[in-house]
Structures are given as structure tokens and as C-alpha cells.
Length: 235
Image (cartoon, rainbow, N blue to C red; front, top):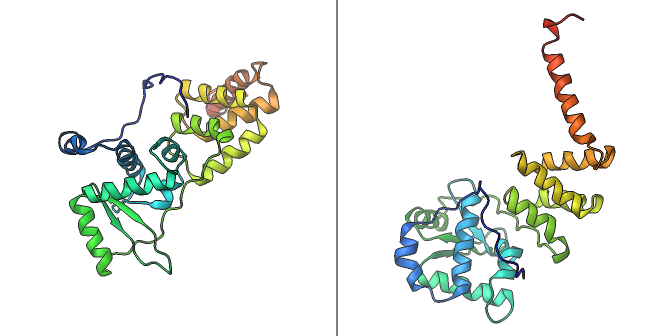
């Protein structure tokens, strides 16, 4: 676990909304740190999702490195997570559904609100279909944490496809290059892995310390302007 002091929130941070009732009615009741961390994590994860029907699966939760390593408690992560989920369901914060789906029995968890109560009733009656279930995120080994942490801190939620690209980048480039490329992109407000990957590719092919990346970027910009306005100048 990282024992370094928190460095503070950057100027441009994303936010996850919480109902006011969470602070006034629910928070005073929760006496388990593991349950509190779990509930906050689920609110955050659900806010990243799109679509009308939002839920998390047990596989998503147990496969999340940040949650599993940070939930604490006595026992294995699976035991602590299971106990926290059970407590949150009993408390009425979460709704639990285990639908039969092609021989599987996935464990689904919803925030307990009117829309989700209605959706669960429709799922149980067959009026509503789940469709494809979300795939759990990749479990990240400790030695791989640096690049993944950089991505989640500076860009957003990690997906399996991006995770594979990050793994490949770690094999190709030094860790210091990767960190500096993230800083370069953030300083220019270009928060995308595609932009960062282009920086790394340039440094690899043309030299990182020579300044060629910045010079070539300016040349490309000038060349683009010439092409755009060449009809206005003599050839």
C-alpha cells in the first residue's frame, strides 16, 4: 500500500456526485470502513457507466486492484468484500440480483433507488433483458501499477483494451519516458492515451533529449498552414 502523503487534487479534476441523503441519513449509520469504501467505490464506478440500467457485477469488484488492495478488514480480500457487500445489501444501500443467464449466475449490484427497484422487478418478470454483461477489468500486478496509475490519475477509467496497450508500452519504453510523456500531455491539456503514445513514438524514433519532437511539431504546423493557404501565395 502506498504510504506517501496525498499531494492534493489537480486544478482540473473529475467529480462523482453523491446524494445529499448519503451524508445526512446514511453516513452516520455506517460503522464499517470496508463497507464505506465499497459503497463509495460503487457510486464512483456506476457514474463512469453509460446507459439507463447501471449496475456492477461481483467480478468487476473483485477484479478491481484499487478496491481489493484498499478495502482493508480482517480476512482475505474476497471475504472482506463479500462481508461488505452483504452488509450494504442488508442496510438497504444496494440491491442484489442473481439472474439465471445461459447457465451462469452473475451477481449484480444496483444502488437502491426507485428506478432500479422498478428495473429489477422488470428483469425478474422478463419484461427487461440484461444484454451483454460487462467484462471485469484486468487485475494489475504490483510491478505494472505505475503506468496504470498514471493513466487513471490523468485520463480516466481503465478499459481492457487500453490496459493491453499500456502493457505493450511498458515493454517498449523506459518508465521515466512514460511518466514524462504523461506530464507533457497533461501540460498541453491533451489527456488521451493516443496523444501520449505519439509522444513516445517520436522520442523513440527521433531522440528524446534533442528537442526534435518540439521542433518537428512546429515544422508540421507551419507546413500545414502553407498547405491550407497555398492558393493565396505564389508558387
